[in-house]
Length: 222
Image 1: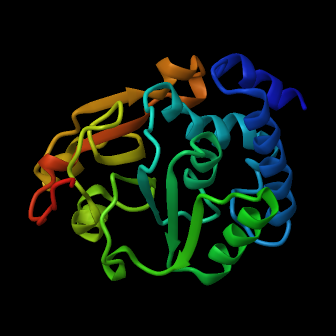
Image 2: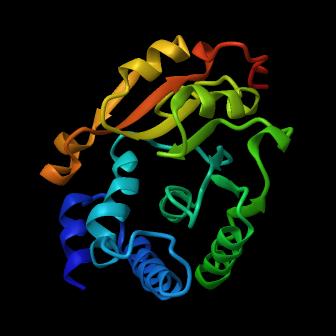
Image 3: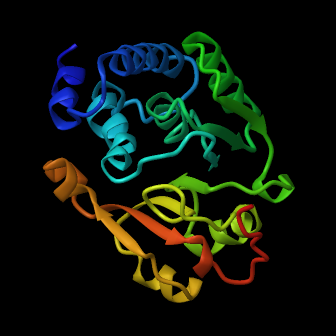
């Protein structure tokens, strides 16, 4: 598939077995999207360029140690959680969403791809009494509301290439949301620059250090 071949040039560090599994993921996503609107119908032909590349961009910056635990909140059809789980088999991913039919899709994809490092649950973050090294979200809600959900799911630590915290995929202006939130990201990854694609203009991944997250009782790593 030409779309996937283009991505191999953009992400040369991803190995061949991982690309094979990502291709299976893309095939299954297209099949499911005919039944459930996981991705805009006008975007499905650009699944690799507009959605997979968007998720894979974090692999340029994040290296995970074995046993790292990641929580993907509001995962929808499994983005960014499933592509990340494919790329980081040494880490464990918990994907949650409040919509049952979407979690049913994610579970089917996990089974098809034989992903042993993924749990998918229909629930809200506030109901999950566990802590994780990273919490991810892809344009789920405004930042203050999203952080109100996940503030107690974070664990401090620095054993990975980035300090533990939140990785949030955000488009457009976000300064007003940051002002309301009361904290600043430690790093802003500019995806137009990273991916050399004008489609990703004003699209970013924001990395917030767990130590900066307000109003949360964050346990230290053991």
